[in-house]
Length: 186
Image 1 (cartoon, helix red, strand yellow):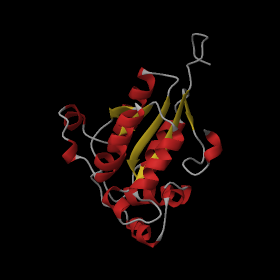
Image 2 (cartoon, one colour):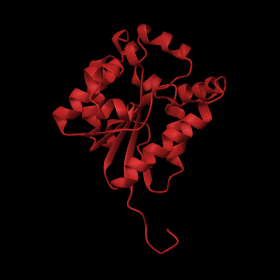
Image 3 (cartoon, helix red, strand yellow):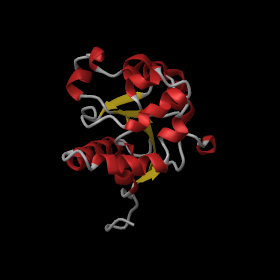
Image 4 (cartoon, one colour):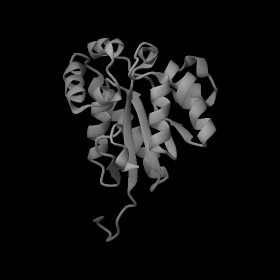
């Protein structure tokens, strides 16, 4: 309960790890699969890990393929509001991506095991903690501007663990457990 005796309205949030150009190489997590997941979640807002200035200037060519070729066109088609929440991941690409051409899909990319591995991987990048806290703060700002909505957060798989952990601590956010591979949460 809030200190003043009222409850904040809950916002339902799903966090989706993306893999950039690797979506083209991943038979189990292609851009088509990504689109199916977004349609299945039925978001009102998409928090996109893209630069705000590029978004406002409509510089879609600066965006990774999952945004240019799938997420932005799909959001336009579905009437989903895209909220740019920051720059792209600048750390080292995850070696876990090597499993994508072998058939790894969204269940694996968005798993607790992959999240734990990426937490350890981020320890190699000295600025990861601060960058991830800033990303979570921008996501929470977007969520709190319009509470009660259904929000999908798309971030690089390397940052998913930090976003999930940060949002889990917010009392006004309800994370969809097990998403994107448990359809019963729609």
